[in-house]
Image 1 (tube, rainbow, N blue to C red):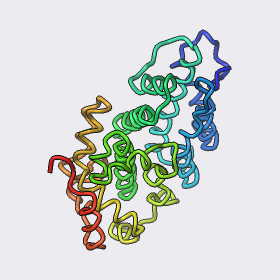
Image 2 (tube, helix red, strand yellow; image 1 turned 60 degrees about the vertical axis):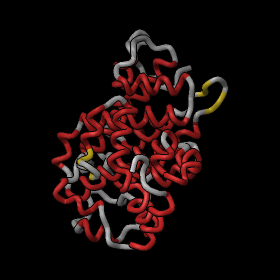
Image 3 (cartoon, rainbow, N blue to C red; image 1 turned 90 degrees about the vertical axis):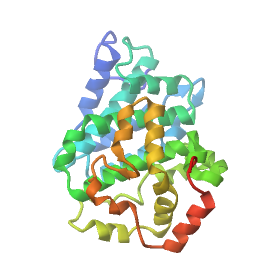
Image 4 (cartoon, rainbow, N blue to C red; image 1 turned 30 degrees about the horizontal axis):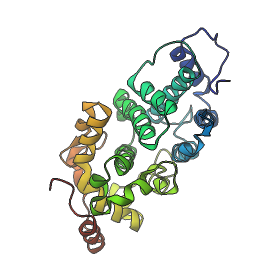
Length: 295
């Protein structure tokens, strides 16, 4: 029996049914969460794919907890991006279970490829394709968000692109520590939570308190600062270019200006991607992993 079901006729195309399923829960954050989790109740070849849901569900719990998915007082941008992810997965689940129709987007095709042959890299490609599509499709909603909310949009995108790179291009992500990429990047394992759940990166309230970006950066967890500025930041430009090539979406490369993410955060305030805090530890981290390939 298909996991993704509703009252629509079985002759209705999967894309239409998926849209109806997501529309039915659009104003109920908890039901959105349950819909996302049910996708992973599928069993493929007798094997469970539930382990793949850990980071996605952890992130959605943050979305529910901080209120961005609320119908009233929530974030139109977060709601729209999340709805796209839910719809893509729901449509793929229906198609996999035999619903009529063809995949309505490249993201749905990637989710369907994951269901047909589950593997960590296929999961990343499907998940990040849906996320990137949401980012690009709903960029017009960014203007309605506060400055700090915009900053964290870029942080969240950078983290999911980096997590994929850990697995797919470990030399790019970790340099000399590349052998650790498979362990840290596998979405089924706890190590990936560090990059994908973002529970220690994003605040738990929405909208964010009116504090300056400098205070937010000063309050960053010490280990996160070392990881961000010591390992990830020197690779930003290459991460975006790799994601654009891997996902087949050239526009992704344009979300980074040189070495600075610019999806929602202005290039003129690019100083946030540099820091003079913890200089010794950051220098040691950079020396340990080495420069990005090609440098």
